[in-house]
Image (cartoon, rainbow, N blue to C red; front, top):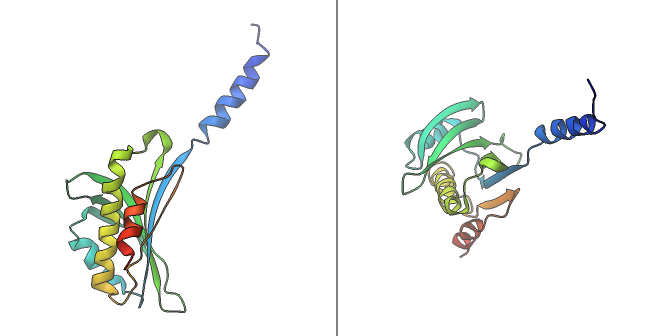
Length: 155
């Protein structure tokens, strides 16, 4: 059996690229002051019009299936930071996909609207004194829909 000199190089390239598929992350964050109680957060998630399904992932985190006004759904994670010294908690909702599985750009406004809607409900129910600003960022590709959240927070 004759082995080509290219075979070892091809094997290394195949292994290294398969283990490192590029990803896409879309994250919406909002500081909540005063720090909300876990019971209020759990109740708000359970009764939210933006949540299709949820499960408790860890002490300060949830797996959520979010839905927009049209009924389209996406899986995300919701995490709350531990209360900080300034009595604030940061609520973060993150969508994570391998780049090949990323929802199309036409779905991004719904994804942003659903996550921002849940963050607004958390703020209204559990920390109404919090500023309305929601931070929306992405890694892997720009998300023009993030601009709508920034515009809504302006006075």
